[in-house]
Length: 284
Image (cartoon, rainbow, N blue to C red; front, side, top):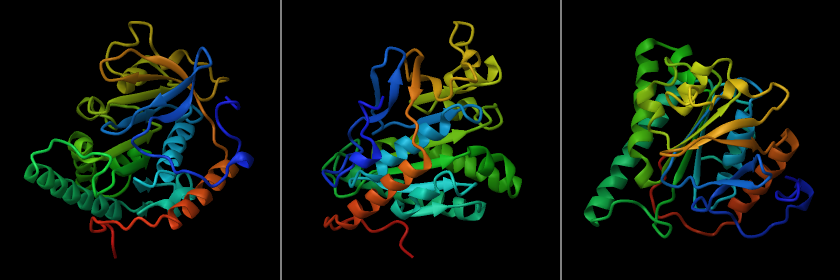
């Protein structure tokens, strides 16, 4: 893997990435690099602690942070999982459900306005050369906002708003990447799971939890994250819509590497002279 991904010391200022390019996430069981095309898609990540969720989530966010044609919105109840990227983001939401709801509502308004624009121009989706940029909405631990804190009605509203973004946001460039340690039916209803084009199941405690992420029936066909060894962190099953699971080993970014890439991304964005045409969604 070290021959595929540059070491932190090898990073040099250069051409930015693009969110329209596939995202490198790791290697497959044959040692070949695995890339995910995320534009017009969403990604669901589930599994136990140490199952590779953090590596995959931070890898995607790192690519988005270094993509000048993309904006970041981060949700992190623990604050430290995605906190290193907060200076690259349009907004960073910590353990505040009211703020999370406010941000999701504003994203929903932006989504509706973008669809109105597409309708006016007889188009069906945004493109690389559009005046407004795609948004990557990264959420660490869905359960914190949808099942743990605050009032029940607020948690239900969070889940409803998130489902709407996942269902309708793809064509207008809103990419949702969501992770959870508790892949259970109360956290990831089937109606929400099936909206994610890409799904990654890291090590799970049972076949049922694996199926909740990948889809019903895969465990019976022999594809279950329950069989992944605890001594093989970062290994998991990746599935695309209408595809079959694929065993992958997620690339690991330690704290120092994340911090260095985040600083690089901040400098990259500070040097970008492109003037945004779209009105900022999160302007104070």
